[in-house]
Image 1 (cartoon, helix red, strand yellow):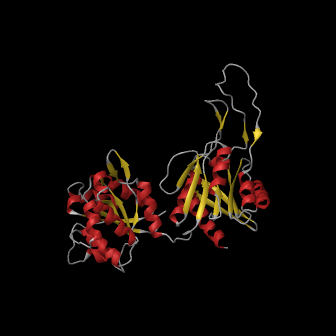
Image 2: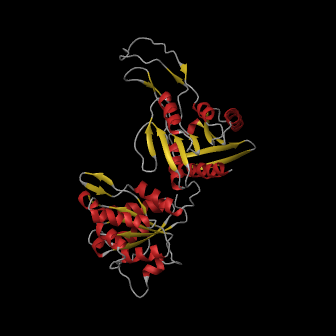
Image 3: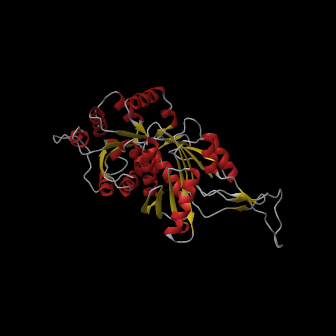
Length: 386
């Protein structure tokens, strides 16, 4: 997600600085090179040696005659992005007022003047986060184009965002915004059909691919609606849908004239049953009458004849020719932009192999589902501008 990106990591004196070692590791796991910059207060919470260990680079703890702020964040500097994590109320206020009395605030002033992207992950007590002056400072720097990884409001604190959220916003600040201004609806996960109040029919899909697609679309600037079985996410407006009918209705409700694309990555149940109102007793034979569910892609296409739609097709044959044939059948029937076909054996795991099937081409992909999500988003960006 951050391959080839150089991140200057500014650390100020919040107790959340204890999370910086793992954050630096995660940035590097996602492909970034990282160099640390610390305030004096931050050094009282975490030792610079720990940051040096995590980044494998020297740490800036003071501005010297080497003009480290320019070397890092100047117009021809090393950094592609300045990430302030954690950022205290004190640090944000100083940045808003162009006060340069720490290495971190001096790097921020330099980056903003040099048009280097800046990402801020605030961390402080909730009353501080709600202070009118802090709100004004946050609004002011946001008006300058600064990106925020918003804190989690828990236990009376504005806790630093998760590592995943910080990585996502850092990627968004550094990637070409090829989907900026576009609204994309993405489905993810397995749906479940109730048999009775405690039992369901479902499948083995984990939702990893669909969530990766939604995240990758957000990174490229899209406004994303994610329809999936449950849980808020930091990169999309999440809509909960458990059954095939709920997902069908939710997607149609959120796909309107302002929607630019739909990506149907969810493993939607092909069959449903009439649910019993009470728990079925065990120990006796049962016959379930399976009824086919409506096809979501057909319903979306009927309501939006010209909308770019991406489909996914899972097969169990293990044969590429059969996967391509099945993908082409749905591609032609619905008029899809392309279909991502794969073997069902990749359900639930992190690595995948897939075939991008278009009307006149087939492209093989192998890699992680995060990488697959990025590839889908890239191809989708081309489709919405064709």
